[in-house]
Image 1 (cartoon, rainbow, N blue to C red):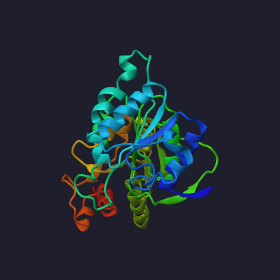
Image 2 (cartoon, rainbow, N blue to C red):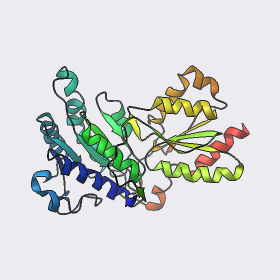
Image 3 (cartoon, one colour):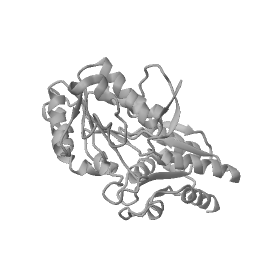
Length: 326
C-alpha cells in the first residue's frame, strides 16, 4: 500500500495505462506544462512527450470532437475539461456522437473515450464553475458515468474507464488533496459496482462523490443516538448497481439519498424510483425515502454562502432522526 491523494491516484492510473498502451493519449487545456487546472497532470508531458500529452486551444467542443474522431480511428483519448460546468459546451460531441456511434454503426464502431472533469463546490468559483450536472448526462443512453469518492476507487475506476470500449464520463470531486492508502499492484474496479463504505443495520445513506465523506461524518454522529447507519457509495451512476441498492434497503428499511446537486430533477429521484418500483424493497420500508440534496439556486461567489448550499451532516442527521421519531 502507498498513501496517495485523489489527484495522485488519478495521475498514477493514467500514467500506468499510457505506459501500457501508447494509443492512450491525454488531451486538454493546460494539461502539459501547467499540469492541469487542478494539478492532476504535472510531469506527464515531460514523461510521455507531445504525442501522448496534447495541449489544446480553449474550445471544449473542439477538444471533445477531436477526441471522438481519434477514438473512432483506434486511439484511446482521455479528455480533461477544466470544470464540469463547461460540459455544456462539450455536450454535442458527447451526446450526439460519442454516445450513439456504436448504435448507429450497428456495433461496427466504438468510441473508447474517457471524459474527465471536476464537479461540485468547494473552490469559491461561483455560479458558472460550481455546478453538479451529472443528472444531465445519466439520461443519455450510450454513456457510462462514474463518480468515485476515494483515491483507491478513483485509480481503479480510471483504469477500467480507459480500457472500456465505450465512452466513460469520469466525474471528479474537488477534494483533490484527500489521501488514503492505495494498493501498489495493478488493479481494476468494475464500472457499475457500488461499495459499502460503512456497514449498518438501521438506515441506509446512498450517495456518491464528495458527499460520501458527509455521509460518513453523519453516520459517526448517529452512533451517539445508537443508530447504525450504512453508507452505500454508488461509485457508478450508469450502469447503476440496483442489486446493491435494493439489498441494503431490504436490510435496513430506512433510506436517505444524498447528493450535492439540487433536489429537483437530481439523480436522487432515479434512486428513489428504483427502490419504490421493487415490491420487496418497497415492502421493507419502515419510513418514506428522504432526499437530502443541494439547495435549488445558483452558487454564490461568497464562500460563506457557498458553504450553505451542499447538504450538511446536520441535515442528514435531522432527516434520520425524524424517521425514528415518526
